[in-house]
Amino acid sequence: MKMIPPMLYHTESKAEQTVFNHLKQSFVDKDQYVVMHSVKLHHHPKKRFGEIDFLLCTNYGLFVLEIKGGRVSCQNGIWYYQDKTGHTNTGGSPFHQADTAMQALRQSLLVKFDKAWVDKICFGYGVILTDSRLPNHVIETLECEKPMICHGGEHQSLQKWLLAFFNYWQKRNKKIMPMVDRMSDKMLSDIVQYIRPNFVSCDDVDEDKKEQNINNDFYITTSNIQEKNHEIKQNATDQPIINRQSLQNASMDEFLNQCLVDFYEKKVGDDYILAKDITIITDDKKKCDEIKSTLKNKGVLIKESDSYSFKRRRADEMTLMTMQDLPVIHNKILIAVIKKDNQEKQQTLIEQNATHIAQLFYY
Image (tube, rainbow, N blue to C red; front, side, top):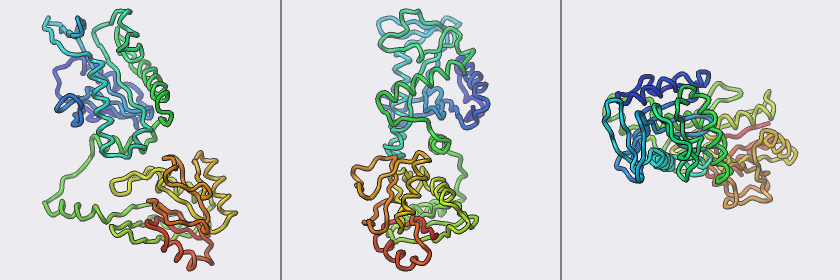
């Protein structure tokens, strides 16, 4: 796993130092997995500023780990943590700490990302005790289940424990929210960049003003089958701007693959493109059937024009329709596939009905 930062932030906790070293040695072949130490939270439900000891960002989901060292005990709901010198600290349940930190993390993501996007993420939390083992009667209580606790030296084989931990939370999340699934590498990258972004400061204040002006007039760079790259523009006035791209020398499968790569789960302004934000339209019923078959083979859900409804549309459904069924398109992305000899006529029709145009393909 990749550690961000690559070294431990300053901490007096020997337990956190121990766990850091074991996390660093786990999943060494998974560079897309990221561990963050000491993540600050500004949307904590009970604290002015909360903190996550370790946040694990993996394809399985996002997981909060609370670390406790020394001898652990609990009396009348008060937890006691005694270090090797005999000094004792008191506090609340580490499970409650981890749970509230996880809820704060989810709330922070909802501020930045679309709810349907966040709802697909698996969230979980756990507690690692580096120097203690809980009695058997404490495990599987109302507050704790065995997969949530790493104790009794289990952190020495941390990767093994984490795999069971990830699978436990995947199953538990899916019982309540069936749409939860493993995250793509792109989703992981976007979340990591939001929580701990890489950046370079502006040289002067004028650069900040330029950034403000860009917010309402932005560009998306996409790859092109025929050309190396080009820019797609969407402006504040919603004036459609068409980019033309030929399908010559490219199969329909290559084209649809390129569409998914260019647009799905990519950022446009402050929003992320979901499947429901994409409409594919064509002027030929045979071509429509071909697109439908190809997308379904890729596991993409399709809502066709005969059942067209923005209110009923699911987040993971793309819309597919023929030109004759073209309504006013409110989607962020419109992919038009039309015959080359119809381009003038159909282009005018598309421009009259579309609010945002992404790409126009000729075949």
